[in-house]
Length: 216
Image 1: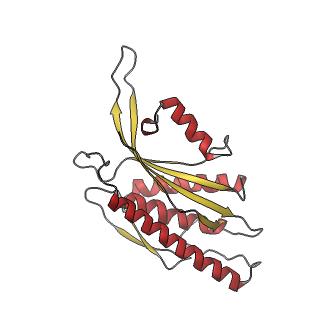
Image 2: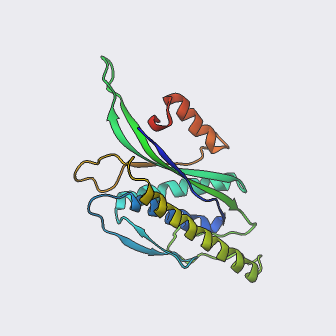
Image 3: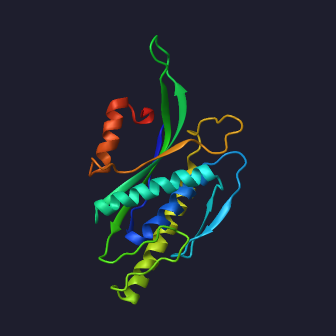
């Protein structure tokens, strides 16, 4: 199976901007790979003049929320590091059963790499709810912050356009989906606590499976 890979433009974000940025990117990717009948929901970002669309599926929202919180916890323990999040779409296949097992494997057909450079100033309050107003760091001059925020907003918009272009250009590798499926199965991989480098975890999985499109 052909596994298409998209490396998204690296974004430089502050810690308190992280949750909104990741919600925007992850939901946009999943929405554009959604199938069947969905209930689109427009979401306005609080920190940026950007609106994105969610699938309106509770399971998708919960899954994305959990991974974002896990990633934020990892960032807290590994400050000022560049990092990646990988969103992978897959289909499930049953391997030829043997007398002792009937193994299920995931065949990966598309992977998105979100590249981040997370800045962590001395004061960066972040609310648990992404719906609440987020507090700015008073230690940075307002003009400097405004300029940096404008650049990040432009970069985030470029990433959204990059997602849309990739989805429109790359279609042949998308597998047929059974009737009744609303969205494609996906998983989100974040850096692990044991590996300081995200790539190490992915390499281990590739070596274990033997092919990047057949990660176990």
